[in-house]
Image (tube, rainbow, N blue to C red):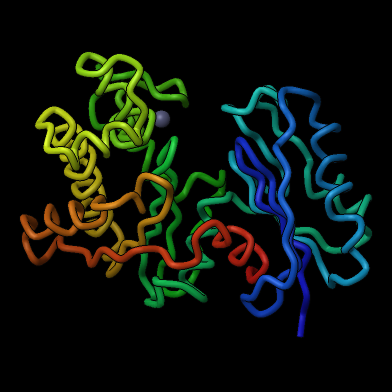
Length: 285
Ligand SMILES: [Zn+2]
């Protein structure tokens, strides 16, 4: 059985694990380093993985940002200035093993497809947390795209004159649906409100909070239905801290009932949690 040294690099934390056949054997976490150089970043990954590398047959990295031909760019992470960084080459040199890299949401989609809630040949994974990420499996294959952009449902533009998105474009779905979008919309009603506060206030019966969450769920449901019209997906697996917050999936399911049967997609809850990226990256060929 093949053992993989897997990493999941997020904006706030980096996880490192030994993974075999969809199971996490060992795992540790560290805060992702701040805005230093890409070399510092590579060193952090290397130092975390080094004690376990002898137990692994290969290395797999799931990371935020875009992955194209073994190179990595992360426009929202200051440390590499949006430039394409040869991450595979650098890590191969350090670990002396085969290294693969993939976008974190795409990795999570593959993990949920292989070992989680999305076991159907055509599925979409959507993670709703600070931002909105996504990954696509079509006819049993992970679609990454030439530039690594495939499945990034959060950056579907829904209003060309709308709110500014972290990607620099205006009116992306993410700006309205994500945790950041939810807390932004809450400010006029509850200055300083966090996403968690909005969920609490909605549970307390406050109409303004219920409306904000309804807008988020409704816009995301429409985007998922639109994805079906392009790719004929059967299931959408929802993860992330907002996606899995109490009541959110129920709202998506309720909104989906309004869709015509032809465009309706089954909504399921992700089951691999924060391990989806590690497990998915490790099980990609
Ligand atoms: Zn965007």
